[in-house]
Image (cartoon, rainbow, N blue to C red; front, side, top):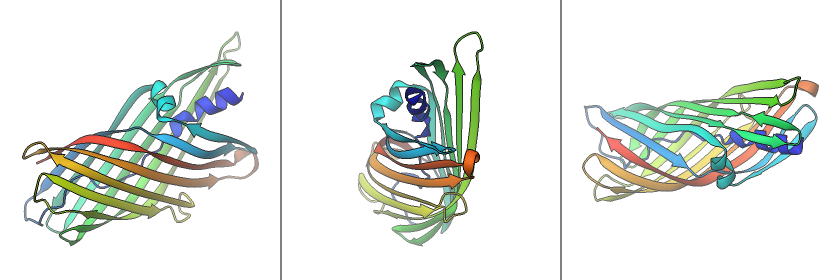
Length: 244
């Protein structure tokens, strides 16, 4: 059963809710829109548990990508003057096969963040909002009985963050996003640190690379209904940024 448990935990590569990876620009009276599809080479470490049983998560980026069936990740941000809003949307569907016992493991993971932005200075923004985390697991045991086990866990984390960035001048820009949240309303605590460096490829297109650390510490229920997820997800991030 350990192999089933570890395979089933690969889908828990939850990602955070950063502001769009783009250089800061001066506030204007028109809407500035940023769209940024991206990929993350996530590795995970920590513990998770159901009822009174816990399992250790130690999954490399190769482990996760080798089980990936479908994935979609992207950021959308719109700014006007000193205010703005945005979202970070992630969906991952993974599949694995267990030999002992023989079973198909089909987990899904989603993280949907929505937040507002408030410009503090030409190079700093305050972000505040919430992230909806969804974890779905399905195990289909092979054989005459064909037993199917399914479980879904979802919760909402309030989040607040600070986005620091260089000015829009020059072809190279840098950004540092930091975040903290949960506060017992969803997770006991969640935090994130996400630095990036970007290179302008034209007036409306840039390519950004960075590294993200995201930690989630969530618990709910007691006894047989207890659930625990205390995991650090980290890895390199790369994506194109389109500005309109």
